[in-house]
Image 1 (spheres, rainbow, N blue to C red):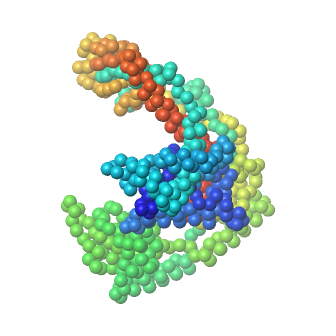
Image 2: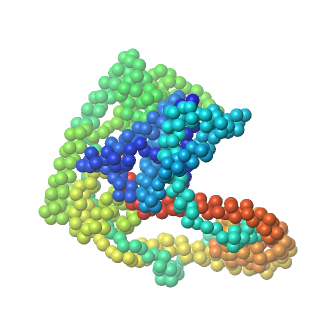
Length: 591
């Protein structure tokens, strides 16, 4: 029975995912690995590979227990990895919040929790009679089964601190009667309307002159203001297999091919040697039609007869040995089922070691002179990045590297970084090349953005003119029947509230206000909104019934308080993450 309870046990669901109750404190054994690279950092707490691997292994075990018939494929493995990381973030931040808020639980709290079981226990079928929780069964189990009593106590001791934490956060928000009344008015001040949409996107012939663009740029210069920035000059030393590596790989491919055509089981060869994601399935790629695979692979695969094995085929992914398993027609399209052994053309350890020597040589030369001169001497291309900001996570040309961003902002022009090994095996060597404080982007750098903005403004102005011409051309009673013939779309807007968003139109508060200012069967004037012009014909109109509000006030207050608390809890957690300076380096350790 206890095993059944454990299967039903749920984590405290909050914010993004379940709270990850770890059996050992974060960092508890991390000190042993303090000299090793860390996998990430959460609010100053470094997470080391061995620790994270333990957490991850538990997550894999839990998934396997819940899905005994399913293998863990690459996508599932990534999901489990991400879930474990997110849960670790929550656990770390929540534990710090518990200490900061000095939240503790007493034995009396635990006893109270046992007396008033949560849904985790009340929803378990073994504690129910005719589908309803039976307290006497639960109480008997507590009194007579020490193992269950210990289990229940440990669950309460594990979850109760977080329940108290969340309640403490929620208590910070209080909804007033006035706020609830205003929301009731907004929710019940409604209209249905037909809207003649003078759509600026339908206007194509618009010109933005240099004079127009320069004026717009000057008038809206604050839109192009940027935070302090840096640039890096860098040399990329790329990892590639040597000719010797390629010959060794080809020799391996030829050997596997010979084994395959001489009667060895193809699926076993794939499971043993293939480096593709289909290896655990014996290389089986399933059925596919033409156009689904890279051309060289597809061309060879479709030429094969059933049971035939191809000679090695080279693609950008490596060398493939293909076996055609079956051929069929599906909805008139030819499909084949193929298996393959993929051997990647990769750099050997010796090649990687040689690359490290080359990079260190470049580094020593750049230290003696500068990066540009060293790159010239060794015939390397030097590149300068675009502007990097302190909040940047990604550096164009280099990739995601928060440590290089920090380096750029902590050093002066000409400072040389140590060689940086990227996830793909390439190295980059960087030098700070440009420093600027808060500044405006140059006109030439944003000219295309400015041109689009000017054209958009002109289109909106033309829509205003078109709408006024239309309104003067027809009587209001004839608007709808003439709108489409004049080339204007009619959009049905149902349940218009002050802050509605509508399909095709989007959100335009000016339009919503104009509609709600009218009654049924009335027409608005031409409404010049934020992004377009409109004329609305109000079909139905309803106003808030404040008598209903008085009758339902208590329930509305309760609902509003619950929603406000939940929103506040989400915002609180997002702020925790924002302030935690989370560093995620898992990509250096996991594919």
